[in-house]
Length: 139
Image (cartoon, rainbow, N blue to C red; front, top):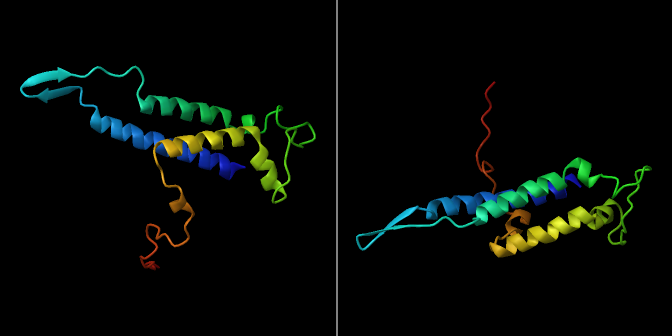
């Protein structure tokens, strides 16, 4: 369950960070055009601010106390929400958790909105930083 929560938060935080950096680059408050000085009005809420608020909300809702709260788990440690049988085991329980399910749908919408290719994270043949470097033995 922690991996899924981490993926949700990491993806949202990554999108927020990228959007915030892009907005910073584009947000020159004053433009010069044809010798005329044009001052831009700041939008009521930027996309980065909207995403920041969503990250804060996700962090709050997906805390341990939220994911394992009384509304989802009985005193005996058994989930109280409906679990459909799929691959079997704990994965079915995690897949059916109302918070995980709703936040993953929401993250999918945000990923689609910014056209983020998340499949690259699942490829086994992706070279990772430092993989082709030799380990130097310093004894």
